[in-house]
Amino acid sequence: MNILVVNDDGYQAKGIALLAEAFKKIGNVFVVAPHSGQSGASSSITVKTGLTVHTHPLNVWSVEGTPSDCIKFALYGLKLDIDLVVSGVNDGFNIGIDTIYSGTVGATMEALYHGKKAIAFSTEYNNFEIVDNEIDSVISYIFGNDLVSSDYVLNVNFPKKEFTKSKGIAITDLGIIRSEIEFSEKENMMYSKRTFQPSENTEITDTWALKNGYTSITPLKLGNGDKAIVKMLNEKTKHKK
Image (tube, rainbow, N blue to C red):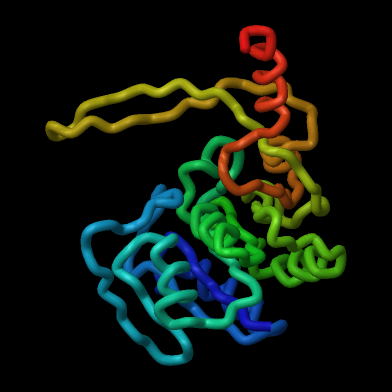
């Protein structure tokens, strides 16, 4: 199996080193990652300018661009024959609404668009000990249960720091928790801060798993289309046609 490893924290980040080592146990690993941090890049791409690429030892390339640029370059610039794309391990959770902002998830969406199976991995900021201890078992769970697919991305988040080990693995939906945004000025710059509203959600979501000490695996689809909503809107408007 040929495995492409990418991230949004940069090719020298601790998380990508952990991810690459874990997947070397099951396949041939190629690392193509941003040359510097690209957090919050989502699925953005570089347009109208070229990409500077740096070649490093041991099948590692760094791209002065976004995570999605890295996917494109790996597949069509380097022409790597890839069976699986893994992204992360991100230094910070990617759950709920943050999945639409995340460059970690964005890279896997780009991979999915090009027909590749993909998994994103994230952990709480500066909490890589639990990743070290449990990533092998999470990978075994995913492949042992045949969860990977070219129809969706798997988004994995490890538990919070307060849990020294995971209580288990939960297959979850996205938990969208509303937040309030406040702006403050510092040195002539505006900075925003989010405060999430309390949630009593008891459904098995990624936010629920985070709160309760489970590792979450959330399937995410490509794009924003929804056939059920299309059908509903057609039903609403058919009498006007």
